[in-house]
Length: 215
Length: 101
Image (cartoon, rainbow over all chains, first blue to last red; front, side):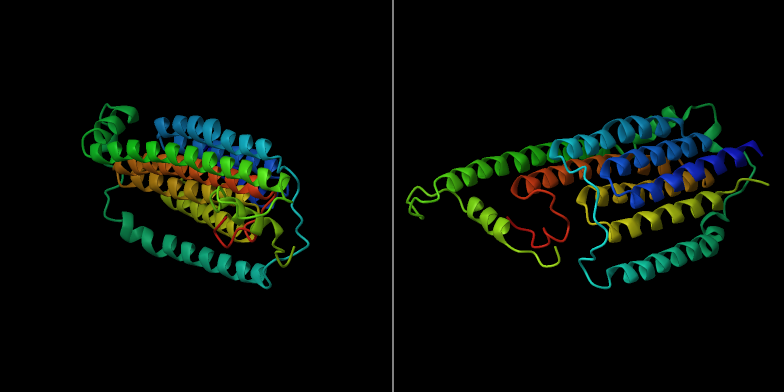
């Protein structure tokens, strides 16, 4: 019974946080609601005796990813509230309602229909292999570094690629922005000089001056 | 009243749908990324729940990898947002639909 109460409270935290992420007009509020949701999910993990994942959830998600979100929001200064009165794509919101309802129906049907076939074969109440004297950290470590060792190594490569990619993305455009500034400063000079820089700057100018419909 | 696996799956479905609707409705790229995180977390709940139910630790391993991929996705995505915002401030997802410049 106590499990049910913990689950109900955690589910309420998770769902209210999720609605808050979607419904908040200010991105900072969305990020804070996301932290609430992630903590609720961590509680659910603890409830299912996945203690290691609960700790990782809080450290990695709330401690790193959401902080990264907040850092970018503050860095770019985009913490202004959205204007929801305009609808850029006509008919998108009714379509979203339909798609959301369809997804919900599909998911509920999956849960109702498929849980028996997914888990019905498992003997409930017997001796659980997960409980035979190991903590979940020991079990995860044992499996992760034997069966999933190759995946683990590829994960390291993936992280490295992501870091390099992030650095390159921000570096290259930083330089082209400086070039754009130079061009703007010397706008009365004749264009297309032989030492003209890469086309990134001109592309940026085109995008800047373009009038986007619906704004 | 017993807490069964179905409750976790139902919660996961609800959370996934909220994230998907938010992804479709919101225009701010940062909030769209947060909605993707919501959807990933919904799937994580499913993985842990079914892993517990099926008595298999592989579900938790999958969550581990999803966490790593989510971190990678956020790093690259936020780098893109920063790079785009250098060219034009407060760009929404509609403004950057041409995927260039």
